[in-house]
Length: 185
Image 1 (cartoon, rainbow, N blue to C red):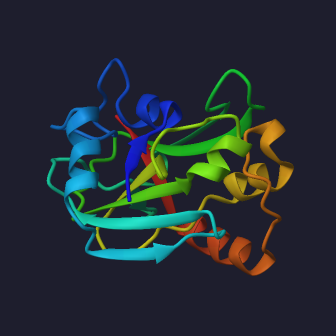
Image 2: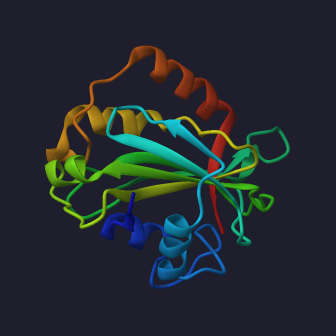
């Protein structure tokens, strides 16, 4: 099985201007090589048959992706309408500004099959393409954000995957994201 970074993941995980809330101490090439050379600790089925999550021990100084919301840090929450790319619709995003999360114990790499990436207009040469990565304290998946589930249900024309909304998964997502938020420096 071969794995390649998609252009979408490359710009999000390894931006031209490095940020402290992306993958650190590792080049895109080293990341891709490690995913191909090292078997994951665990493989989790994703939200659709074309999606798998490979769990690896964090070998970088990358920090956890999310921070629990508490009374002590609630005042650091910010929000704005944003899009992940120029082609996507703006959606409401929420994050902490100024919170300092711990170094992640795990990197949960989100993979899509080559066939799905062709459907989404992002063909790759490898069997699987990295579309994202979760940086976590536990070797578990962080629930997909509700807005990501909605975008996926809208279809590939709107930057999603075309997978219908699963109401129970959506409820679990809301429960998690009501209590946690991403962070930015």
